Amino acid sequence: MKRFVAVAVASVLALAACGESSSPAVPGAAPSSGGTDVLAKAPVAAAAEILPGSTMEKIKQRGELIVGGSLDAPLLSQQNPVTGEVEGFDAMMGKALAKYILGEPKVKIVNSASETREALLANGTVDVVFQTYTITEERAEQVAFAGPYYTSGLTIAVKKGTTGITKPEDLNGKKVLAGANTPAIPAIEQAAPDAEIITFGSDPECMQALKQDRGVAYVQDETILIANAQKDPSIEIVTKPFTVDPYGIGLKHGDDPFKKFVNDWLVKIQQAGVWQDIWKGSIGTVVTGEAPAPPQIGSVPGS
Image 1 (cartoon, rainbow, N blue to C red):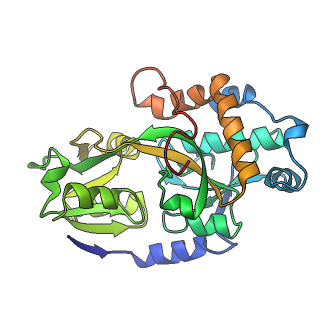
Image 2 (cartoon, rainbow, N blue to C red):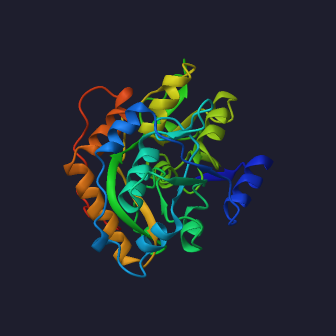
């Protein structure tokens, strides 16, 4: 299996910035009307749950939750160019957690990348990561994961009209695009060991490379690719998910009280229907049917 990494100069600069305390950040704007309705019934933690000296208390004293996330992931966490609001499933989950701790959905999003998430948690730049962060045992050696809070899977996108790719094994002998430091890489290696994997630091970079024929296929989370295909009709999804990827909420390693606190919050928003409403207002706008059942918390290795 051959692999090389292509990273634009702009990406290097952006990723370098993400590793510093001065990482680009966007304060979460007031939610849209639909978001307001969802967050209106989102629970708030009792005073006794904000333990003295805990991460929760530090966040409350600061007055905002700092979230490692994306500003360019449609349906998940994307900045609205008109309002400045960061919208989507992950973005709203972060706002709901902020409300649980602070009593109001006050969030600052630090634009992070797959290569920088562990460092941002370890050095305290962010409190949590909401960023399609698949739980793995390897990652769990560096960070803690609350959840899982959502389950998706990898699938394959190509330029419309591309033939000969209908299953993962068809990637053998082809140039395949994937996000750096993502589960797509080992999944491709296992399914198509003769593929040549080309990695980039973000989804938009991978999409651009696909359209420029720098790779014949792009392996990415189905949720992200559905949003991409809806926005850009020049690409199409050619397979069903061929992996099961549980998303976790990234936390600093070893902070067991905060992990329990966040897991307790997940249970409460699921029981209150807030999780389901957040799904309906984001992913559910392009995926038909009722909201899926949330995954069982602690149900996968590493969680």
